[in-house]
Length: 449
Image (cartoon, rainbow, N blue to C red):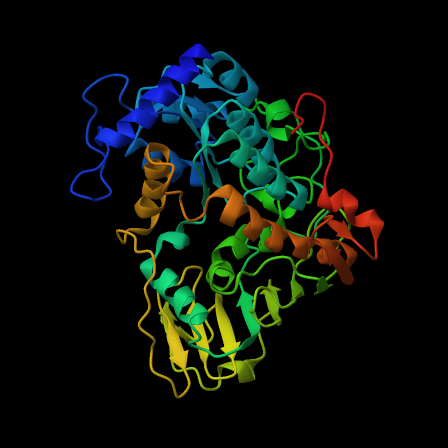
């Protein structure tokens, strides 16, 4: 602990002197001038999204250790970054190298996010975690509390939060651009992985895979071909379905614009599910009450083959062309409807915006980034490490935790395939106590939160 305190004290003091971080206000980190200057990082999950997460973190700090359950991925990444410290169990890495690292990047399957992030933050490590922040509603709120108590810099990997176009749109809605908002529609083309299927047949665990660590806190099941490295998203025990995978992106702008938290009810219609794999499609309605002067409104979510009603797009002119085909609406996006105007944002991130109605675009002030989505996002996290007075926008306690909590509440209604009355203060589904197993899933011994 003495070594950990020394590193944190050094990093805090370096903020005052601007040591080894910014170059002309841009997003590039200059090379360290002393071994102790660089922020030392441990990365958990180095394949898939972890590939770019490790790369982006390496632009601002020193990758000191790597952890992945897949030995082939681990060896390849360790060779690329010349890392000698590599592990297949996150607990071993943190227990052995806790005094050597300052920050962690978590890019594992959803069900392992919270246990890794919580252990690291309790050890005083700054934490970047991929979206959705957690696997359950309970975990989302807990990680926010742990982060605040630990006083660490945090950031969720919903990189579109750093786009100036996204922030401007959100702040225009805050300023009354659309008038009183009553409806929000958000949709995605996910899932692009199997859902609604029976479990794959049991097979021997491949020699390169640490299946015990892959399962982590989830209920144990035999290995099969339907999980690692990508198809885990479709299983209740491991993923969060299309909703959890994409809504932290596609619902991000309306969340920022409307303080979209603590719905009083959520209702879902689905293709049906077997309690093991998520449904092929779902439609979910969230009911948000008045909040601090913001009017009540409903958000409608669509995934799989589902889209908002076509008549909502009759006055939309913005088309997106892809593979020679023009889309209106696009395969993913959001539409915010007020009593004065509408705002249409096609795609997973708010890069394009169409304002529909007899209104002029409002000039608004908003927190501006350097404009490069992925790097600007990571930049904010590293800046927060150096200067705690400038937390990243998508930090755990104030933004990422509440956003993830709102998103994952939809899965309570998906599980029930009906209506859920929600008490946000007590985190209780008022009309169905059996749903508490979805609110707060259990953990296997040795992997507790």
